[in-house]
Length: 191
Image 1 (cartoon, rainbow, N blue to C red):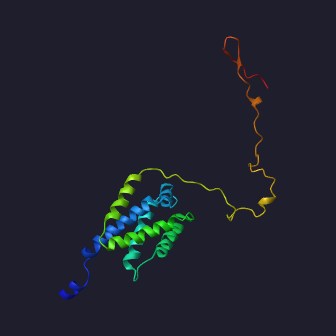
Image 2: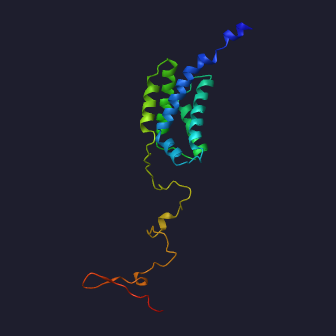
Image 3: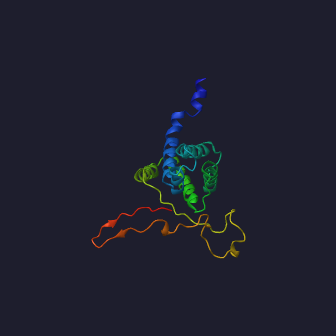
């Protein structure tokens, strides 16, 4: 019975590498502007921060349980799927490739016992913690499903239609100022 215990890896022997990897993955996800914005704006609902942590645990579990070395495409697919399902975000800026590349590189370094990348990533994450993410909003580019295919036939007026006639200034008389600079009080008058 004692021989079976000796043959199986003990949790404490595996844990330091996985804990270090998890810390690095959390740091990578914490500095990724797309995910920071999604969490800050609660795109995943009130539990957005927990969903970020869940994504980190999914990545760690995928590396821990993989029968082969995961590559950048595997990690990117996992990240993109999680963002689409949990935050309803479609990433088109190429940043998911960098995140996936960093995660794969982190796994390789942690597997070799190196801690420099984790320490560096955590320092960057600590530095930007609490800072707002500046988002660049791209107006519709014609690829949206909701846009009308006949948009080229419009008269070029992009303003919203007027539902209420604009109020004129005549409904409120201008104040009358006398020669000495005093404003005269005027009665409302009878209508």
